Image 1: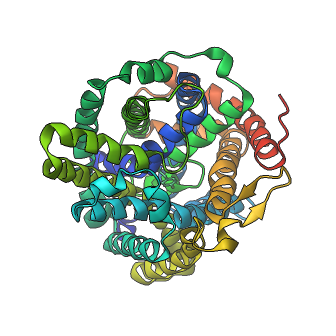
Image 2 (image 1 turned 90 degrees about the horizontal axis):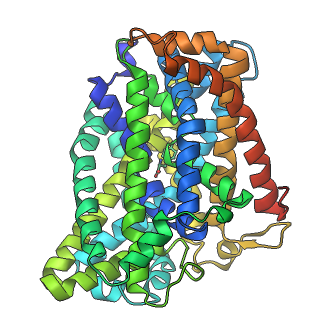
Length: 471
Ligand code: PFF
């Protein structure tokens, strides 16, 4: 192991950091939106199925490639299959990290901004209809909050592996879990929560359509930080002695659990706080948590007083900010480790340079909600839908490139690297792995993964951009 690159202090450190990367806005902001948009429980069902059948083997592939090579995604492919074009897969990952961070950090800035405004006494205002639109349309607030978020992200990435990323994850993730649990219990006591619960938990299988499957796969990839080499990068700091299969599994379970809990909070909250909501009229859009969380806390204010409710709301937005921060760190870590390893630039300069360029690209997303006409109506797809810059970057890099990366990674593992190498790497640190049921299952499913993912990928592209639904 190359100590100069840094290494997690323990297996637990890796699990926390990888879970920190996985758990973020994708779970708390994205998952409830996708669930509301895609028919509720049917989406949740497909999401879980895809997470464990298709995504978990890809999680293992990424961690194994990272640990085998101790390299960033580009270097890893160069080492495993020198002088081939496979390192392009790593480059695609680095580009994805770059572009995903450019919109992710803007949304993280909104969350942080809500924390600041609630702390300043603004809870009641933020709980008013229309307020979210005013907030995101303000270019100065966007610049300020996104800028602060980027500075924090760069600061921690500069701090390196043990001192930066791991220490924060260790402290804040468990607190987030506790607070989510407490809020769910509160929302369950409100009127109409049962209707939301039914929408969320009782699947109507006729709602499983191709677009639902597409969204579930993209969401699962995004949520697990998969398909762009983030787990290759984090895996590259894992010790040879560690059992990566249990780490990978724990991360997958933690990630889906937090997504499920966030859904369990937000979906019933919509039904209780917007009295006319039905399964057909349920709200789904980027403003979802920003509209409903302040309303939940305002509701709470009638029981515990405005001051205490504001305190809890501020604390909750702060925790979501931290969850987002452990993800922005990993998003920046991918391009940074590439620049450090491949371009031989020191970590500090590399992080500042990459973070700075991403911030400049992010300006497009900051202005995409009304502040600039150009970025608000950035592009019209052949299907006729008009997209702002933030949504466009999301469609291309989150919905399309992550599954594409997942397809290429699983195809690489199955047909180029060969499953024997994958098995050997997974077996390091876990006695009796070879020949176990898990081994047989992963070795089998990894051959199917490229086909399943490719099929869904093609459908996503056609549906998203051209409005063509094949099946
Ligand atoms: N998994 C993160 C989330 O759910 O918020 C987003 C993410 C982080 C995607 C890191 C990709 C990544 F490399």
